[in-house]
Image (cartoon, rainbow, N blue to C red):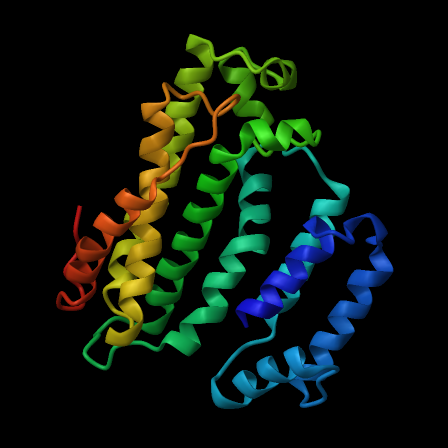
Length: 257
């Protein structure tokens, strides 16, 4: 499943992205239908076919991820957060929804499955928002601004301010709001992370804590994500593992803040 997601993403961002077209994505979606129906095209497709046969996977998040790739080929601006949220769902929220059936839900959990899927979706959205905030400068070099245009305008900002790569007080205030939004989704994700099957919780908690630390790093860089890339060092990542493990073995439903 991870390999399929990587291959899908590389259709747009990989070394052969210059040959991308709507036809390529249409054919990729046809291959998806085939592998869900037990007719994989190659060995890598066969791995996902095997997973589909073993776990109750829904094809919709997979289709939606392909739709997100279509969006990326057509759209480089987002007028408001509603548009940006949809993009985040397509390219990252879908991945979270794909993984829940494989990771499993703890038999000790009393929560309805839908609430756990919602928490997983929140983690995917939070992760993608964090990716966007980390990569603002790099995306601008490619002519892309994955930020709500109306919210930029509220702080007297526009695309030219992003391209100028100048960190102003208005930019800092704008970024504070964007970071708070991402943290909101991580807080929403916590409860569901504690209700997954016990063998699946550790990597989920590790991802959650790591991405939160990226937001901390943006703040530590004085909100300069235009000329600097927020970086979490190897030592800090290793130190995070015991904490994520401690949270993963806690009783389902016990949330940390």
